[in-house]
Amino acid sequence: MDFEVAPLPYSKDALQPVMSQETLEFHYEKHHKGYMTKLKAAIEGKPEASKSLVELIRSSSGGVFNNAAQVYNHTFFWDGMKPSGGGAPPAGVALDLINKLGGWTKFREEWINVGASRFGSGYVWLVLEAGEPKIISTANAETPLTTAAKPILTADVWEHAYYIDHRNNRNAFLEAYCDKLINWDFVATNLQS
Picture 1: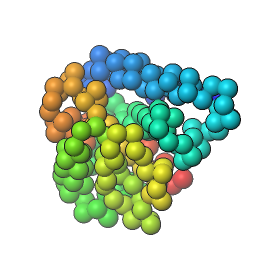
Picture 2 (picture 1 turned 60 degrees about the vertical axis):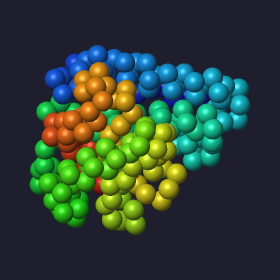
Picture 3 (picture 1 turned 90 degrees about the horizontal axis):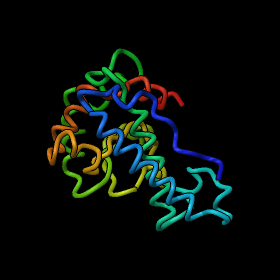
């Protein structure tokens, strides 16, 4: 296997005070890197070791799928945030997309509602499905990569994503994510690829 956990696109203190350095250290170092360690152990010396991460996600099940998908989902989550991000998207393709969903206020409300309504662990996603934007949630390690939908943005709603900073208040985390963390450049890049 020739892949590693990607480095964070910012320093571990860059998202403070919205997301603390302590949260990033636990989440990235323990959870994200832990999934990669388990994935490598599960496929070492097997034919699956020659596949890409996306190929593994699309062709595996059980522990291999869970760990591969978690590596992918977490990397996508990190890339979708930036210091001083969030708020309504600037003019351009991201704004056009959000307007298709009814505008910033409606997008924000639906994003928070869908993410907060996920029972247990999972993710809230902005995807393109048949060319149309949708906000969906997935349970556990599930990812749009196993469907026809194209992932555009995600927020992790597992408790380890927000518990240190927000305790059990997932809504507060999702509000802060929308208002102060979304990386609209990442959204625009995904829309154009």
